Length: 431
Image 1 (cartoon, rainbow, N blue to C red):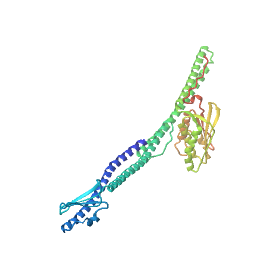
Image 2 (image 1 turned 90 degrees about the vertical axis):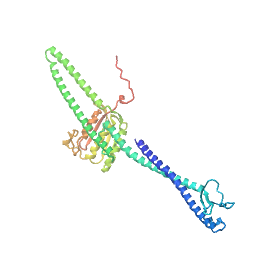
Image 3 (image 1 turned 180 degrees about the vertical axis):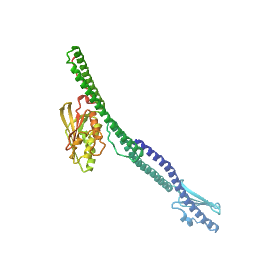
Image 4 (image 1 turned 120 degrees about the vertical axis):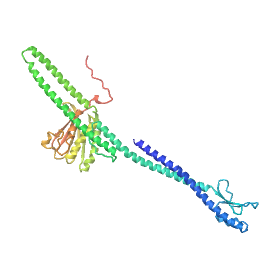
């Protein structure tokens, strides 16, 4: 885009400069020649008038009387039909000359010539000056085109990057505006889309959670009732009850598989991420806003940490937690990451965000991740969305300490098969 804008403006400036410069150069050289000829014609008329007076007075012609009117290096030639010779003054100039000729009233002609070399030099200088002006115009046009292309390309790249992050699950609002009405309207549309998508993700997570909870509860109740039937004295009824219980257990397994598949589908962008590089980038982005409030950001990272997570969702979640600490906390903010060994669901990585503020009130702690709940007058959507996003990648977000407020993100450690581009041999089972 930037290259196209630059080439279009540069082409327009170059064509305009050439269309104006070529006629201007031609006109300038013609004007130089016209002025030279006008000066020469004025001199030759003056000489002719003096010689006319001498002829009319019957005096013998003496060209020394008109020598002052002859330019330096010029050649004067007077032709009188009543004499056998022509009168000349000045050196012979050869063929490349400029000449002006006027008749004498008493019969004859006066011809004044000068070397065309000085005029050609002046014409060349004028042409070079015009060419220099054209080149300078093109150069200035190139600078203007570069600035204009940069001003247009930077917002377009930013809009494209925002759209890409939005598609990757990064729903943070960006209040950057570009002072270009069309681009500003696109930015506002992206903000509206980000808000709508964030709410949609949250509703989807709540719906899936509610449905899975209800199904699991009803299925558990059904299994308990069927288990009671397996203990009845009637063997036929007990046999059928055991068969029904087996089917219910299979249904529970299918439900677990469906929920796991749904989580995997949502975590399609999850990939092995080196947390050291990612968290350093996020910290660098948030240091300036914290510094503007007179606060600092401390980074504590354990070496060699890897997690399976979507990079865009990780930036969104950590950004929400840091923004929450900026808005509602106080003092220095700490971003730490460490390994957590093997938990109930396998090895995990822990990321903690804490500050030195008053913490989370007791009455708010139980509902801090519910949508619409906020202790500072905000929308109450950020933490709910952050939990939904991190849960979509198979992780968890918890409030691990109320005072000081400490939010903890648990992320799964990638397995060998999670590395893209590497085909790992399947486990062999005995036949």
